[in-house]
Image (tube, rainbow, N blue to C red; front, side, top):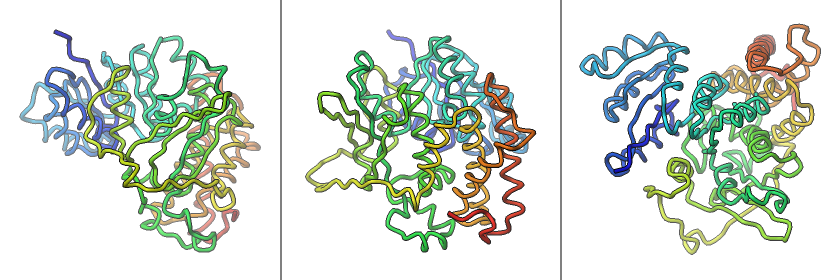
Length: 403
C-alpha cells in the first residue's frame, strides 16, 4: 500500500487554499495526509479546516486572532497551534512531500522559502517570490533539488505544454489575460471607477488584492516577470494577449511554427489538480469544456495606454536590480489604499511608477540584491516610500502623477 502524501497548505483560507483542500477531500481516503495549515487572520475558517482535514499543526499570522483560534480548537488537543509570522514559517518547515504556497504578496516569501528548502515538491501561487527575488529563489530551488510546480493558471498552462527537454525549439510563450472588468472602459470612465467596480471580475472568483491586480493588469505584469524566471526566457519571448473568455490559459510557440495551447474552464481547481497530482493526473470537479457551447474565442492586443502596468513591468525587467521588488511593494501599498478608497483607480499604476522613480534617488534604499535580507530591506523601504507618497497626495486628487 502506498503511503499517504504529506501535504501542507500555506494560506489555507484563501481561494487557492480552499480549492486545494477541496481536491484533497475528494481524493480516495489515505491518498493525502494534511500536515500543516496557515492563515493570516481568519481564525474561524482555519479552525474548521484543521478539524475537517485532521491537520497536525495550524498557524495564524495575526496574533490578535490567536485567542479565537485557541477557543475554536479547544476540543481538539491533538492539533498543535502556533501564532505569529514565526509560527507560519515553522508550519512551512514541517516535513511535507508537497506544499501549496498560496500566501498573497511579499508576506509569503519567508514561509515559501522554508518550504522550498525541504527539497520536495513546491506548488506556488505566490508569484511575488519570483518577482521580488527571482535569481535568489531559482538558485535556492536548484541547490535544494526542489520541484517547482506553478499554480497560476497561465504559468501552469505553459508548464503543461513546455518541452523542457528541447528548450532550444521554443520561440516564445504567450500568457493570456481576461482583460478584467475594465477591458472595454474608456480611460475617462476608468478615472471614476470605484472599489465595487474593480472587484466585479467577469470570469474569476479571487481574493480582493488579486482581483484589483487583474483590473489594472498589474497581475499580468507580475506574471511576465515570474515567467521569465520560471521558464528561463528573456522578456521579449514572453507575450501577452487579452482573451476575455479565459478558456485558453497559455501557449507555447515552437520554431517549426507549431503553437501548443492549454485550454480549460476558468476554474482554479484545474491547475491546482495538475500540480497536486504531478506527474500523474487526478479527477477534478470542474465543468467540462465544450467548444461547441463556447462557440467563439476572442483575442486582442493589450492596451498599454489604459493599462500601463504592462509597460512598467517590462521597464522593471530591463532595469533589474532592486526594481522588481520596489515594483511589487509599491503596488501592494497602492492596492490597499485603493481598497480603502484613499486613492483613485488610475492612481494605482501612477503611484507605482512614481515610487520606482523615487527609489532611484532615495539614500536609504539598498542598492543591490545579493541576499534575501536585501530583498526584505528593499521591500520595507519601498512600502515606506509608497505610504509617504499616498499620504501626501490627498484622496484621489491627481496629485499623484496622472497617466
